[in-house]
Image (cartoon, rainbow, N blue to C red; front, side):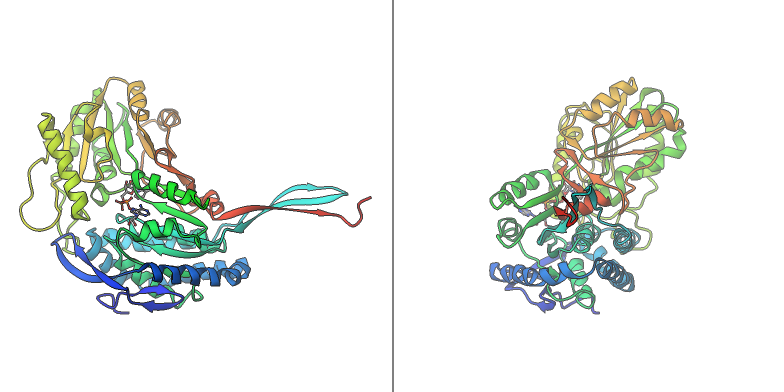
Length: 475
Ligand code: NAD
């Protein structure tokens, strides 16, 4: 397969050119890499029609056959790992090693999803009747993914949606369409025509999907602001929705930590993928007893990290993915400067091409600062000094978001007692960002509606169906 050209949509198992095209930019040098297909409304109709046509047969395909096909999808991804990884770095900006982790992780998540089963609940099994509740597929799923992890976040949707017996129309972000287009092309050889359709386009395409009468469920990952629009649009036809939205995760550091051990871990919790992770630690609350040595250790470590073009040897952090986000991150930093916040690292402008922002660490900005309150989604780490753990918990929870959070301590039980008080969908103790295909991942508060991954995530792609059978032997 040629990963450098021939980017086509997948509709009914065929490669389809767009009605027109739009440019895709390499964020490391701002050069146009390729033209991606721009899906017209009529082409979306064709993709939805293909998914509808494929649905009855796919729904009737034995569960075990679908399980094997998920494994085959994983195999196809592993077989194309190198090409997918290179393309992902080119369009997304992340270093090769991170791109490989993401693409490999996509295969791993498909394999993990394939180990699960849909539960059947027996409600009654008496002399008179048997009643059981099963879970049947919903129909056509519209899957909409963001630009920070285009491959794995698409797979979070595809795996369970297809496994449960639905067909899919998948739309990646216009900032990162290429890897997803190639994924669609690879999977044409694995899945029956129409079961997975991949479309790409500009800002109109997402809303066309959420209002489309032929789509029964929308699974969306993106910002909270867009999530609200998706829910509103989906409500017209009572589409089922799963929304994985923004976050402003807190990391809480207890005074008993081994400073040198946790400094690099806390650094990566904030800066992995250049901070463009929904579950990045975006507010790091540190007990006053260790604040000074820990701040110094994190800044010292940060100075050793190479930021640059993800395709260059030794790069550990790439550019911001797109110009819009680049401007937003720069605006947050400018606001902090204007407010007189103290910078331990960063704050200077970047010269030259590419959407690069120097790693930025702030020394105890006020709690109501934009850089603390808002989801930065960039290489920014506000270190926040607290007098007590109670204060840290209260501040961590004083957020409209509730995606994830972490607690760091030499005493696991003590950390767990703190973690259990966090109002978030996931809590990590002495690590962060670990996700599993078999563990529920959900956003509380404004971080989402519904669940991805785990049996709970699988069930989101089903309707409950209760079957009541009166027994022939009943009086
Ligand atoms: P975004 O909301 O701008 O876009 C996400 C997707 O929605 C893109 O494919 C976009 O084209 C599409 N879209 C835009 N407007 C739409 C509309 N009106 N109707 C339907 N679709 C529309 O988000 P982004 O900037 O691509 O991603 C960053 C955000 O995603 C951050 O807030 C981040 O926290 C969040 N995110 C959440 C998770 C999670 O699992 N909770 C994971 C990754 C990213």
